[in-house]
Image 1 (cartoon, rainbow, N blue to C red):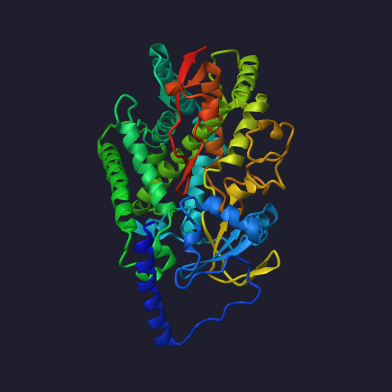
Image 2: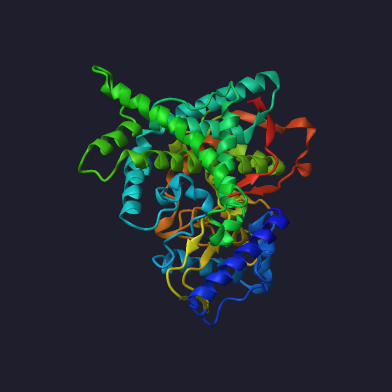
Length: 499
């Protein structure tokens, strides 16, 4: 964030706030016993403490001030949680009080924040959207019925990698996994592929999705000084409107094409998710209309593809960075599956080391390092301190995953720590909650786990891998970049050799 822009906007916001206070002469007193934290600067508060990698900056502050800290980010009181005990209080014990979100101004473009399942307040609309996602996308029955599509897309991924292997070419792992995820979702939703590996469409589509996640996650002065919302001084909402518009134009074409097909006499039904959603829109008894279709589709394609592909990339990066772990993973796969065979979903239960790799990847590189911000619904005591009503609350799962009091050799990639362990990622073990917990746990978790194990296991079992451009494991860049999701700063490029 440009420091001069931040300071100028902050002082403008402060002037407006002071004028409003003078007019109304009403301010709610702050509760006593607030959590500790660094002293704020005038006007901007602790904004400069965030830096470019807030998950790491906040983890350092937790080492100084403890597992619950208070920051003043402009006009917004923010509380950051960095321990599993307090995380349980937020996500489980007081789940009802923290069920709603602080909606970033970026996602208010096209009013997405009020129609999107991750952001919409708990309400009849939220419950209806959650039911639609559960019934038509993420129930075990629905996922079982689309298992053949995931197998088909992973086979296409392996064929793409094999083509590179034949000529000694490199594979950009994140982009390859992203294309697989996007095309599975598109096949399930629309009965077609959205991106073509042989063209630049995959890279362009991935860039649009990343820009959406980056804009939604990076610091925006409007979120700290809401009085500046109409000005949009950093242009964040304007850029997000452009990115959303590109996605919505695509969805409009697909929806309109399907409607024309449904109106053509004798046209066969595809019976995919889009047909089911359109049936719901036409059914007067269903609480669904066409205005909800595009926000729903955006949720599926942005969150569904980016988180899974980034996790595949991080897992492969850690294995290439730790060759002995890669060899151990391949030994298990070769023994259980036989060399060169695709990993099917039922096979995963027989691959404990592969499962441990996935959990260790989530520990070190959670897809959403601060989870999505929650909003405190009333003054509430947590960990002996009062979180004030209206405060923004982050759970720093990245910091919890790197806590030396919880994890031995916390910065070392060691899947062995999960062998024989009951700790899982499904929202019950609060030392490892990369998908959140409680009623707002990520609804796509079951699909993400299926896709991740199948893609990662198949890539490891069918190919040997070396780093591109002569890079050796000890010289790999393992730096990350911050958006809502935690991406790899330098894309992982690797050269496959067919087994």
